[in-house]
Length: 274
Image 1: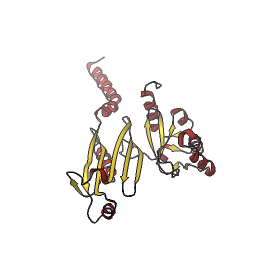
Image 2 (image 1 turned 30 degrees about the horizontal axis):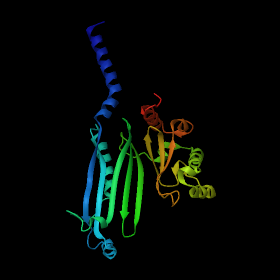
Image 3 (image 1 turned 180 degrees about the vertical axis):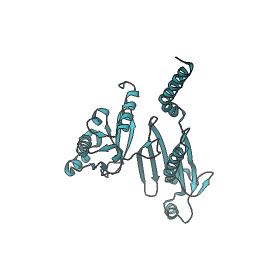
Image 4 (image 1 turned 90 degrees about the vertical axis):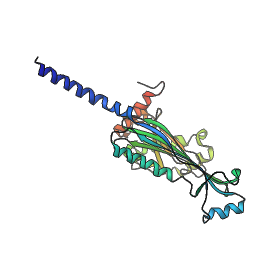
């Protein structure tokens, strides 16, 4: 073998190794940093209608916030990275308080509004990032609170959110049967809601789309189909979490890349299949 041919083989081997290791290097370089968008107590503008209601109720016209969101760093494609971070920030801004920052509240025990947004990473690979956002708003004058939970499954190659209809295709009846089976368990959601679902026999999926507001996350259990609090039934104020494990997903038509992510997440959990 000539030295030139030998050199070409070495270059070819180095190229192949680079192709194999590049996704792992990209993943290793990507980090998620928790960033505080807003934290503190803010005086609502005087023209805000809530201020008049607060005064009548003996409340401080203040809003307390604790809003945190993820910032992605280290991606090779900076355009995708900027797109993801802009999406995260705009979503977090929906839960901030307006007004001027205060050193302290007039009456810390009687704040008008409290707002919180936090998140949890449920899965990360070279292709996908899965996050569960939890938001909470408490308004004292009406003695009401709203808990929100929303899953985001993000394509790290495009920076786009993966929508439900892009994941599951043409398997409506199997999904509906699976969701209804969960809702028919009194220990899961309570007998009154079971009675409601028995009477309505409503579908939850049609033409690959959720008929109620829903989202997805991926973790070691599988693909979670999440129905927002209060959407399936007004009394159901918690998140409805329908776990679609890898065994069930193999019986329906699922996007191949998402299926691979589920299998990888399942294998990585303690006791998972390798």
